[in-house]
Length: 307
Image (tube, rainbow, N blue to C red; front, side, top):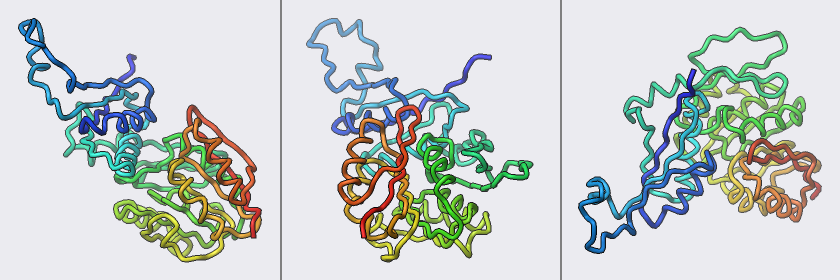
């Protein structure tokens, strides 16, 4: 059977085209760019040019990627929306062939149960799943928040989380999205767990997911600008599945939240930026314990060696 593809198309002001292209290239290196801002007839051969080009918007450009329809479309859409917001890109995102007003329900078809690591299984709320005896089930309703296990960044950090969560460890999830990391940590024995995100939509979704997984007594969710508004407490495990630039910005502050010998899990890092993140965090008192990679993504486990 032929592979079915979905086009994700972002229309942006011309001045933001380069930034939008960089964000879209995270999803796929194969970009289709529609930019007619420099097109000029110079008075010649106008009759040979397609009318749609003649009438094209010269103030905006479009960047498209094509991804397999069964390859994490919903996570890709949520990822792009979050990253465009982080970068201040005024993007109109379209899922071609699907009306935006239909997306709220139709995106559910792209989520199926997915096993991560040795025991964790992420199961959408609307799916039936018969768990094996040793499996840890996490029920998720991602809404429009990013982080459901289908993207490489989430898979990488969950693999590390499974290895470094110990019974009774105090855990902090910064930029929590759906709160998938805090919920998984709680299911693996961490307690208590705190999850923070700057996005009020993510906070709402996170609270619902925590409730649906019966973790309200273990996981607390709050709205915060990264670490700056989080109460100063010490944690044995801190997870940040964000992007390299924000992890670098957080680097001077993270140590204040770490117990001696505690573990930081940093993910959402594009491979070319991994060395930069490692160097900065090591300069701030961390040492690299483990490095995991998939495709062009990297996740790090680092130990806090400071006081």
